[in-house]
Image (tube, rainbow, N blue to C red; front, side):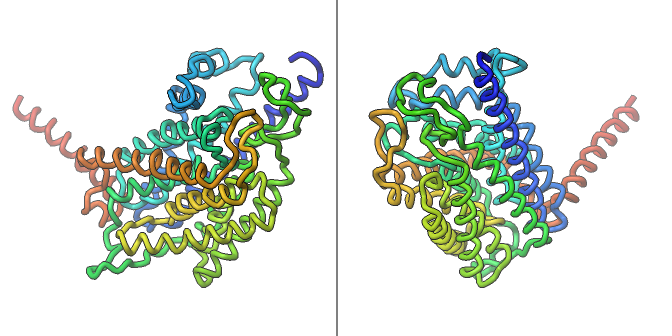
Length: 453
């Protein structure tokens, strides 16, 4: 490791990211509780397994190709350059860094932090489609967004050399767009094809409110997501960095922390802004929903997500106001889209993550207009047009379109949605009966063969 100072820096950085991974795991405990609480009793086990099984599936695929994509595609490719073969090869599944290697103590925990972001993107989609999607179809979609679409958008707009940062001045420090807008857009694309739950809309088209089975579980789940978000925010930073050690292209003293773009920040700054944006969202959620507990707590999450794009640079009062504005607009958009287009988003995931994330990017472009997007020379500064185009890319191009196209393909094969009779019976019981019927058919076939002999 070199000097004692280098050794301490390495050990600290390793532990720093390891701790963020442990904290972010609480996000997925929260998502499981939240989804089960929001679903009806007859769908609990299906809902739980659908969401939890994305963990091994996305982990394996992210190891084999998702991580490679992040390092390979910051240039587009062929927008600001070609494929970054050298950087990608160092992060391919068979490279020395992707395994037990005492000379590299950072890659494993940094990879894991990004992996937890991948789980989050897939879990956001999971909540919106509960009680009617086929588990196998969802797992295909989870791999598509978790190890494909979101990591491409991270390479474009969250890599310190990403083409969107260079050309557009795109700024998204804590992932309003990179994780949340893309997941919300992807979920919307799936929902357009999947259709609403049976009974969600009356014969006259009016939406029925399908209440959560267990609002207390939903509440606790959301508070666990808030808790995990601390790890999420911290994982979006680089804890210790020396500008002289990254190519000599940045001048300045050693920073105690930077954003993912290598611009200076502090944990104190994001602590102020995290809590203020959470508070703004919860207050607005309570106000606009007239005290509805589900939307009050979801409003807190929407407030954080709206302000996340610029929470490295906002003043706490700005974070408070922006969190409230985003929550108000996301709530209104949720019900307008539901009634206008008959979209059944079971937990409001498209609104809380997608609309809030999109709005947050647009607001960030205006509020931080003119700030440097990067410490590197020649990069565009933060601006409204760049962040608006970035929001469209995140929500629409890399979010909605892949979700819609993949769902159309799955639907054409008849595997996207659970059959109507099973949905009416309940996915837990219906799936079990299907398995029992299949087993009985096998037994009958064996008996028939035996009798023929």
